[in-house]
Length: 252
Image (cartoon, rainbow, N blue to C red; front, top):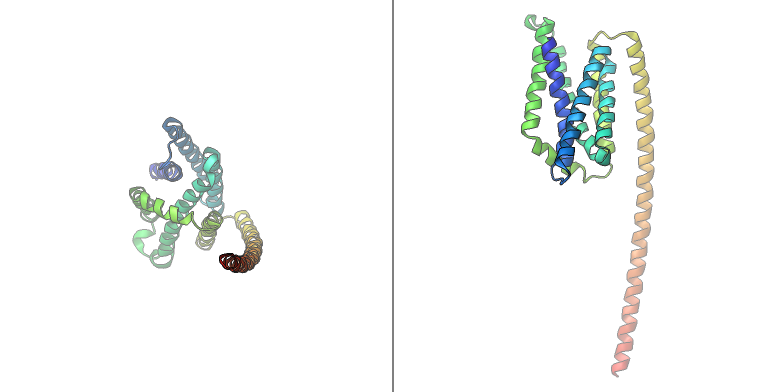
């Protein structure tokens, strides 16, 4: 399985660096050599990041978060001039891959765990981790333009970056909870993960309260603007009536 793990790391790092590159350079007229160089360096950095985290942290609840944060940092560095859109593209990809991994993990743990042919850990890894990732990676690359069209629709929304980033991290938490339930993680990682859950809930609550306050302020401003517009229309109507009256007097 060592070869498959190595190949999976290559596929993941290439896809995770290619999607942000594709999204922000699709219609760009930037210097192609510099753009390609950034893509290669970003790809290599993400590969080293994934490989190192797998090597030193291994399969644990912290592995998902460590990879996610490390990849965000790397993409932010290489695409710093357009990092919001680059990170949005990466987060969309990360969300799709995580949902796929979570789906197959739930299928295995809920329905197939007691079947004889999947009790072998190598068979489980091959058919429920690597194979779906390879197939999904090919589908994403094949239909990347459709993902790009979805990206164009998303960036037209208000607060799109915060929402897509929040959803991608929420998916990490769900995957980690699934790992804690069905996996064999050590106590330190479990306790740290529980701490992260409470921190995430607090941070999300604070953000939503701030967002609600901003929405309320915008609504007040919109009401004031509408009131001023109505006053200006009334003034315009009064002036128009006065001008018409004066013009009629002039004709007399």
